[in-house]
Length: 208
Image (tube, rainbow, N blue to C red; front, side, top):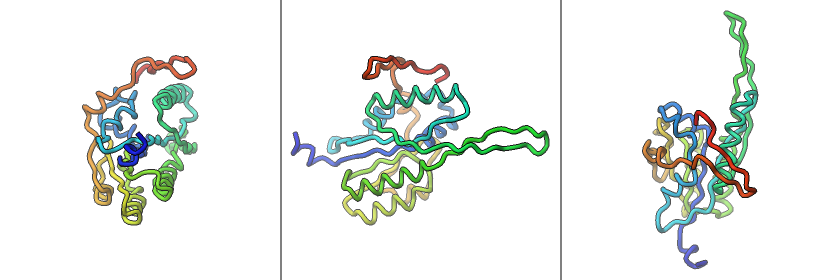
């Protein structure tokens, strides 16, 4: 078994949670938010590859308890499927309408892009993968993708774009790229109920 694994290409998947989420929302796929990320990625793994890890990068929602609860349920569901969670942070930016004086909080995600780029580069340096799958359409990753593909000649970064998030500059530097199809997202949904290791039952949130 050990020799078989050595012969296979090691794959680590890096998921830009926000880019994926809003790509689905903007493309009219709100009903796909209960996405089984592990199942989705495993569907991209070839027979000569072995999936080493799935890293899901996101930030915890703040200042909105109902949304916080739904997000926590989803993240716990992902974790129960073997997905590693890496958190950035949301910073509250206070906005005010000059005309009516109404103010509101606009959460801004911080550190996620830096976390993904850092993990991609460090894992390449540590020889943790042969192929990296990046799920994102964010052009901020162009320098990082280009660096891995040019400095680490035996490694490759391939990109799977969320719906509506195809980016030409990212596609140009990736070893390969494709758009995640709508049908694939529809088919890769988590069960309505998920039992965690401690026996607690997670339920799909209403509206998801």
